[in-house]
Image 1 (cartoon, one colour):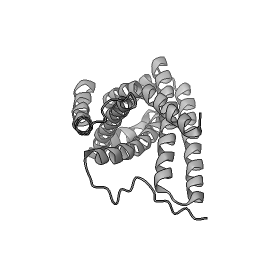
Image 2 (cartoon, chains in turn blue, cyan; image 1 turned 120 degrees about the horizontal axis):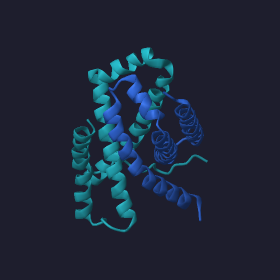
Image 3 (cartoon, one colour; image 1 turned 90 degrees about the horizontal axis):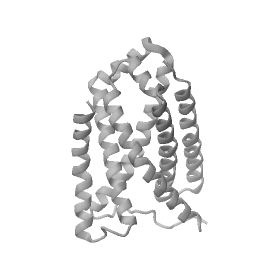
Image 4 (cartoon, helix red, strand yellow; image 1 turned 30 degrees about the vertical axis):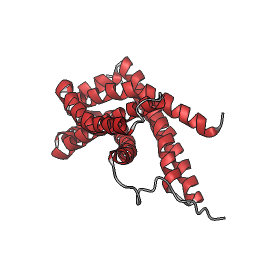
Length: 109
Length: 124
């Protein structure tokens, strides 16, 4: 199996996982966004939300980094700029969800 | 050696139709969604700074711009979700006929607007 096929399979698998998680999240976002501090804290402190939000973040950043690297492939001509952009993309796709998941698991009422 | 291959998908020479519109919009909403999710990470992080400091976040979300952002994110997530379902159906080998492709493209556009309204009606 070549790299492009693996990338395609990873993209499809992560999109199947993401669809229900995105629906779950967007309903909760619309409900929560203007609520009081303790109501928002209670949501993110609950065990199902911690787990689902962490899975969402991991797969969303994974999926997005693969998708955006395809955009770089299509529109960025310079090999050096493309290489740098991809490295920066993968760095942030790891570090942002990692820090946020650590924060989520440290939230408590 | 300099790579002289043209970059795809030649948006400057496309004859615009519903499929190309959905294709480029799918990419744009994908980028918007990851920016939105990063803002959600900032929102979650702000919970660490206590109730008093959270008032600034609440003030932003209650402003016209804040509400506009939430509606925009909801539409963008809806569009991406429906677009991804369309892609998955294609991956199963269905919906490639020109007429079907135009209909499914229209369903993604109008469906995302209807879904946004439904999410607000149910979620609020």
